[in-house]
Image 1 (cartoon, rainbow, N blue to C red):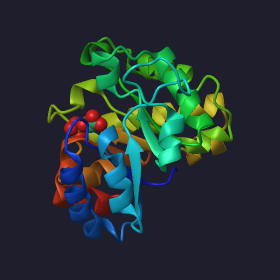
Image 2: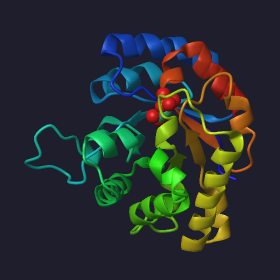
Image 3: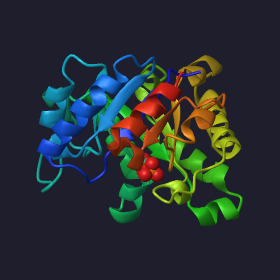
Length: 250
Ligand code: PGA
């Protein structure tokens, strides 16, 4: 299966000075990690994050990007700008972007295209709302999100796609999916990738679980065969907890 990757999603938290402090606290705790470690920081923290992670095993992600290279898009940041700074990763399609800022499967696909064209690696977030799970349409929802986002993505480019399965009802709620629920959907996504590409390509993709993953539940979630990592919100702001999750990813 895909290589283990633990990524922190800091959301709208930490000033640049605080970001530097947090990375300096995390770095020594994760230096011997056997998985890849990423911090997803606010745009304004990117310079300090790149500086503070230099010479460490921590990668830096932005939390969104626009699909155009430049132009009259007040307030937006392009994938090319991120690439030019030295940012390696971008989180796209997070449920908070979809729910509060109008992102759709189509705009997520456009952002994904731009990010890949700029040379970035994408953490593509998918996941169902509680009502959708209760209606029994989780697989359909997640398939649609994955298929639209990957519409124009080649088999070769798939190596720069990480998928984060994040049931919306589990994000920031303390209500984690069970190990089996998380694995079931991650395995389903892998099957969808196999149908879009092939088995070998699907196996190589890192599929993370996200949604109230923490120091206490990470080990058993990450032990599931199709869960290759985590996208961590709240717990990524606590160095010891984040390090415990990183240590559990092996
Ligand atoms: P959470 O957030 O770990 O705080 O639930 C996860 C995410 O939104 O990526």
